[in-house]
Image (cartoon, rainbow, N blue to C red):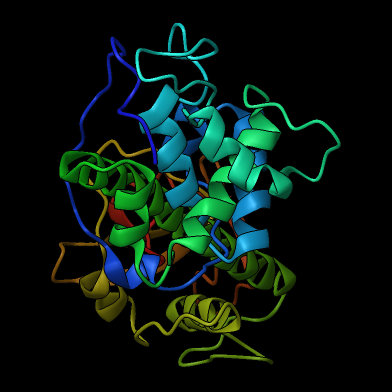
Length: 292
């Protein structure tokens, strides 16, 4: 039986969001900036290792570590509390002894992060996680508020990790699009052209993002309308689209940012695909097709 949460620790309580769908299956997710900022890197590696071994989401295991000891940082967590629990995962000695086999060491240590996290993962799995996560968390610490708080942190870590995964995918798509567009340097401008022997401005952009698996409309106006349009002053990054024309309803040219102040584009009849400044007087704004 688990003891109560470490007494005296100050913990930030997040809004509780139960995420049974996420907790119901193990996912390989790139940790997000918020997770990395909150979790010491050594602990993060241990959570991921133990979670993979026992078929748990690492975010769930990390959430337990957060609530129990703030990832080992709560003052006094290395000494028994009033109920006798101690260590980064706040085990009572008898409970730790029951699951210490998971540590895989000759002399498991309740205060050692590796040993404690492996034992916690073994206990959660034995009590039904991830299929019965609430039940497993209640068995870990018999309090409804505790279950809700752990699930709140697990949800926060999962959201951050998912956001980072999407951002990584989007940045990768933009890099592919830029690489494709730059590979077309010197290709003749051809009105209505979408390659490979010639491009117009929007045909080049459409083909570049198609190479990255992202479908864009065909014309500059339609690409502008598809957006999303960035707020004025947003720093532009490679892969962003820059638009030109008399007005937002009369967009007649588009280029792709490849570096600060520089775009690649297919400008006009008689020219070739080239790089040039996008500081034009009829600049209308920019979009980020990947939603980054």
